[in-house]
Length: 447
Image 1 (cartoon, helix red, strand yellow):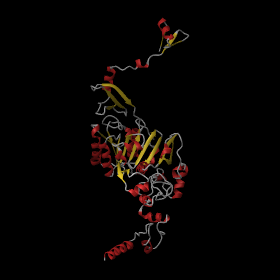
Image 2 (cartoon, one colour):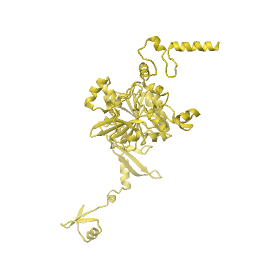
Image 3 (cartoon, helix red, strand yellow):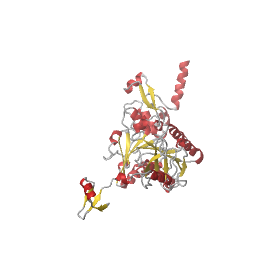
Image 4 (cartoon, helix red, strand yellow):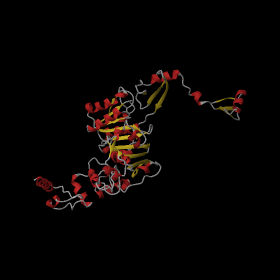
């Protein structure tokens, strides 16, 4: 802004509020606060331009993804507005594209503004349009699908259920399962205990969940009594004297109460730096004072890298994550050839997670033996019963071979009669003949 120089402007220039030019004009440094001063008329006009504010003091702009939040005084009058610009970013889920193929529920954890809603909005489009899944979005504040009865094209062919009252979100979630036959349900901002229980109910009914929650780290969720059920819940357990001595801990310890509602959790540290947890393994490790192995996913100049490292080493988003000796470390050009040579499907192995109960993590044996890997870092080699824990991800057909390789039983190619007589390290057989002999010995003992 320019004006003619005068005596008043000269005095102002002396105070440093303007810059005098050689042609006799001055450039005035106007106060930005005065230019942007909001009046009651401005607030009233803005309130009429947007939709109706709901019980959560949120509204939207018809046909857009923007969200307007109201600030009210003690009398309920709007005294301020906050506008969050919503964007539909195509290709934003390249970092987890491999996870879309597996039927595991997924929880995004991050601070406000890190991009959680943008990710699940793009996931809804890809799952419904490209993978042809029946996706239902429970949209509490119309932030995922935009304001209005017609959802924004950014969600693709996914259906959207609006929530009339934010306190009724958990009811709409259950209603979506009962009435609309979804394969996947998406929910934004799980924040109450009722919503956490609704998530568990939906997961127990065999429907996949994709949801977000506010938080920075997995430890925040574990310590949150309202949302801890999402990761299995925490309970205090009293150990016996011998067990406490073996563990080297006190008699009262914290244990995971139930299987987690979300088997997979992603900490969105930054927009291009995510840390993936196999929740069951990570929670058990953290409660026992161990460091779980996590997947670190980074995007740099359009290139996505996936590596495994210890959880404490995943703090610096600028450093390169340590790569594990798995197919994830191989460049994309050589991945197909390496996968074919190893007999592994490259598409399902990129994410190191398969949909069956076999080994979920590339680079390890079927039992998860060897160095700790993603999903099997809680197992301790010092535990005499570690072999039993390692069998949880092995199909029955591979269990004998895995036990034979570790010296617990004889060779798996033995004859049928010999196979019935093999012994574990405890000396107890598992064949039918062993069971019959045991019953016979019991009868002899009674006589």
